[in-house]
Each structure stands twice: as structure tokens, then as C-alpha cells.
Image 1 (cartoon, rainbow, N blue to C red):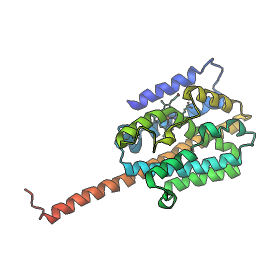
Image 2: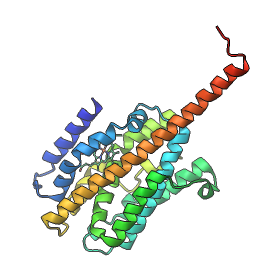
Image 3: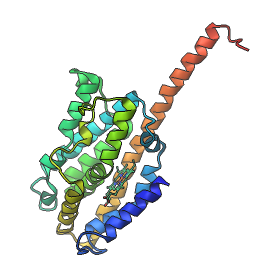
Image 4: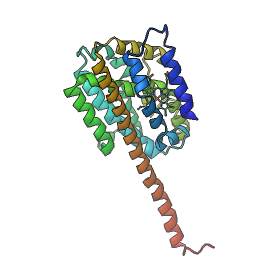
Length: 258
Ligand code: HEM
């Protein structure tokens, strides 16, 4: 039922886009339509569903932040490399969007001053990171797809996720540990998304390039889902450890409770 709500919201946005100057051949429309199905899939991964229900353990949330840190470090490194590229420059909004620093603060909060030596890049995250670097260096136009997938998503669901995480993990209301979800330089997410869409639509791209971009955005969603699935698997082992511990206590007690 959640995905139905979301689908409606996305459709409403696509059709009712302030002034209605956008058409089906506009990149923003093509991206929204072309990722609609994979967006629903992403929302329905177990990890995301659990997160939305507030069923998230702190250790897993921290690993999620680590994955995001590596992802945004790669993405923003490639964005900096390509900030003057004519097919990316109009989307260069470092003050408004960039998350690298926010994530570094969050990780310092969770792991302490020595956080950098305590984290590593998981396999699924590394796949995502490798693709971002490849795109940034070999086909920078496709960077648009990666920026779209993450930043537009963060601006859409971010506020809900922040509240869920704060409540579930009992994080301080000061916002520590949740800077990632807080876009201080964006006052209206809705207005900013409209600006971002119009900037995407003004990029000089032929239909073939736009189609390649949509395909890359679908890929970006899949990279994200692989990270979610990996986190879910790790979550199971955390749970299993707990259960194992319980079992061994039974064992010590002779195991003959009945
Ligand atoms: C847009 C919800 C997960 C990427 C949206 C919108 C909603 C939404 C309601 C429409 C906002 C608007 O048009 O103003 C959710 C929920 C999720 C979720 C409830 C589950 C927690 C994701 C994930 C990604 C993502 C995992 C990708 C990593 C996007 C993108 C858009 C978007 C790129 C912009 C669509 C467009 O207008 O072109 N999301 N989302 N979302 N979401 Fe999500």
C-alpha cells in the first residue's frame, strides 16, 4: 500500500509540474517515467520496508551510513572533476546538495574521532563506487543519472527517513548522526526539485543520450538495491548471533527447560 501512495505522488508530480511546460521528451519526465518501476522495487526491498517501520538496528544503520559515505565520496569527487563539463555544470550545486561532509560528521558521531580507521567499503558498495568512478572518467554525461538518483531521492524521502531513524535509534534531537538527512541550504525541497528538473531539461542532449541516461539511472537504482540487500543479509547475521547466544545459554542450562 505504501508503494501505491508513492506511485500516485510521483505521477502527480510528473503531470502537474508547475506551469505544465514539460513534455514526455524532457529528460526529467523520461527519468521519472523510466525509473518508476525500479523505484517501486527499491521501496519494496526488505531492508527499506523494515527501515520505514522503524525496524532498524543501530549497527545496521551505521553500516548504511558507511555505505552512503563511500558512495557520496565517489560521486562528489567525480562531480568536482566534471563541474565545468557543459553537460553537468548546470547541475553543480555543491553548497545545496553535497553530502560528503555531513556523512563524515555522522560517522564521527557514531564511530568516534578515529572513525576513518574503523570503516571499510563493502562489496556491493564497491561495485557502485567503481561504476561512479568509471562514469565520471569515461562518460561524464552519465553522472547526471547518478546525481539524479541519489539527490532527488534524498530530497523526496529524506525527511520521513530522518524522523523514523531519530525515533527508532533514539538519536538526540540536535540532529547528531542525522546530518545526512538535513539539507541546511535548501529551504523548499519541492522548489529545489523543480529547479533541478528544469536544469536537467535544459541540458543539450539528443534523444539517444537521454535514453542512455535513463538506463544509467535504472542501473543506479539497482546498485542501491544491491547495497540494501547486502545490509539485509548482514542484519540477519546480527540477529542470528543474538539467537545463537540465546541457544548457548539454554545449552549451559542443560537445555531441558520443559
Ligand atoms: C521520488 C518516496 C526510496 C529515488 C520519490 C517521491 C516519493 C518517494 C513520495 C516523490 C516526491 C516528489 O515527486 O516530490 C520514496 C519512499 C522510499 C523511496 C517512501 C522508500 C523508503 C527511494 C530510493 C531511491 C529513490 C531507494 C533511490 C536510491 C527517488 C528519486 C525520486 C524519488 C530519484 C525522484 C523522482 C522524480 O520525480 O523524477 N520517492 N522513495 N527513492 N525517489 Fe523515492
